[in-house]
Image (cartoon, rainbow, N blue to C red):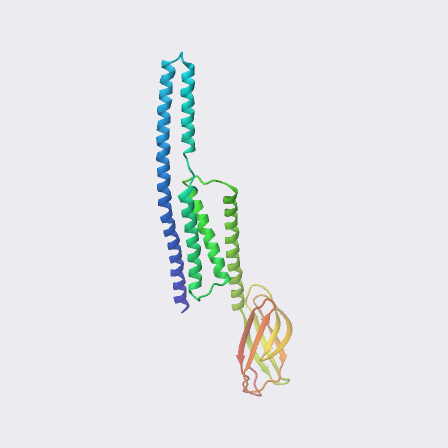
Length: 277
């Protein structure tokens, strides 16, 4: 069952990645087409500028005695050059900006839908995943488009890149902490239980298989809670004896809890009045 779940999760991850790449592939040709049209306008304007410059040189040769006409032609040439420079437009203009915003919003909504589809609810983890995924996609779009296009380097762009780094670091940091806690919880357990006849006690051996020290502060035997402070070093075990008037043939639910919230429990029954377990 775990293998099947793992394969299903991998399929979902590849599907999400493929969808993001598909959206980016749809975006790039449209933006590239707009930029090519812009380059054609720039080339035409540059050609007109060269023609005007050639005409200006001819006028200087033919009309040396007419400096006023030459100055007028030079002024027209400068005006043409100014038009050529101002005709270059960055990627953030008009359609490119609107299209990028639509893609980002669609990806954000899609990630929220995927997170809520499994259990019909949206918890904090799914929201963090959607927000982090949206920032990563947006940052990736900026990085890819900046290779070819002129993106304005303003304060908003800088703040967005910094915020994307913070969100991604927080997301993966939270996942790492949760994974470490889950791993530690799986490696802490009740290793052995003995029922001592005289006096009647229950000896509990607790194993700490994690890489950090734990402090067991509560031991539950059925409904009774016992306050303790048992410190167990990493990869060590310790036995504690608890007074309990146990009865043969009765099942006992024993549970331990640490100061960090990790728990482990076991159900055991004493074999008989004259035997140790």
